[in-house]
Length: 553
Image (cartoon, rainbow, N blue to C red; front, side, top):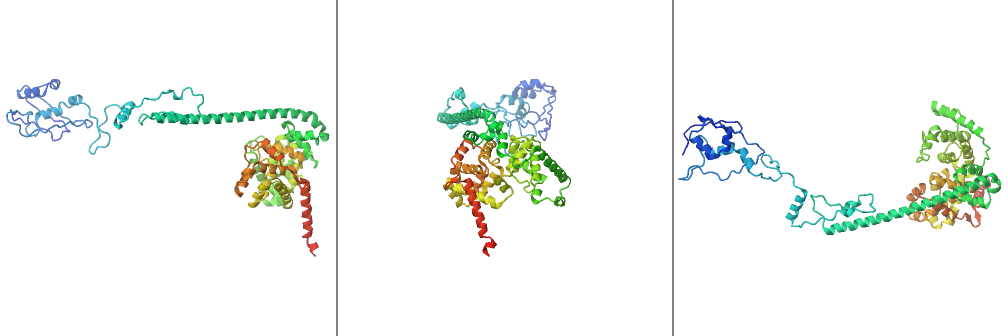
């Protein structure tokens, strides 16, 4: 049965609200929501509605589209009334209209939420996920069910408990479980990781025990050395120093000297051993220091070369400029931070070097002097350090090197090679094959008296015996270093040998070095160092006579 032909104006667009009016009594919206569809149709058909207003709003975009179901046929079958009431001027039934507009919210609440697959949608937006995120265990179970794997019972979580030793690294991470979104470890893999971890811990324990024994041995040797130094200090202060001239050459004193001087008496013994042949007094040091300060002041006011030439300064004196001394001081024992600018010994080292350049303008300042002066300053007072410094550089070997006397330097190198071939023939031939001459590594050692190449405490012990034996011990020390690293040097080429000998390893110990030095025999064909050097000087003089123009004529 069709409704009377009462036109209702339907909106052209569903996005705008539209109104359907029927000339009947008003019907409350709350009642309509509680009625069924048949009741609404019956009420409208029977005229129970005076005025009824329906507002249609477009459904929210985030709601999932409703299932349209089978499309209704245009013509209903005979004998069966039409399920929906047609509205004039439209192709949709009234029941479809009311079900889409009045009960959208209610149907949304009753219809279970449809989970849309994540990803992009070709047209429109992807509806948001309304369910909560799944638990990691559920994800794990779904993955295992999908891949056909059975869920493995988790291992006991006490794997890292009660471990006495645990390395300070990421080693133990191998025992951790994988994140929940990844497949769990199998029992075989977990056992293999446990075994690998135990092996790593065992190796770490071995290293730790080995290092502990090494530290213990070093501390034991240090305590023993301190006890020996304390007992030796008593002997030096009470017995040797009061009777210096009579006991300095005795066998007992020489043996104590070889073992190293106690730091408390080192400076005093060095001063006595080096001597003061130049008769320098503290007052003389103050005079030359004041001259150096005046020169520094003039350098700060003007640095033109004409002023220096007018003063009659030599080339060596010009080398002793303030800038060169400052530069070299900043590179003197940089790890100690006591000789650099602002350090406690910076000005003191600067004063000693400046005073010496004024005292010996023929020598001037040469790079490397700062290391020798710095070692003396660490063990002596300022004036005493200057006196020892000036007398030490006045020795024949040091004077030849610092004045760059090539002829004398070649004689020292030749004497060194004589004992090099005598003591280390295999290494000597290896150096000869690369044409590696002694000047490549000996110059730096002699210029700084090993204070730059060796650790400071070891260099001071070398200085102890150098003050006892003189220049011979400098070259003997060089041979001892070569003997200590002979096996390593035999496998190196020219470049690596030069680099290695310029900067020796820092882990070198005094016991190893002095044992190698003691093994060096400074004798060649029953000739000692002084005799070999004297014969080389004699041959040089005879050679000069044979090559002189007077003899040729």
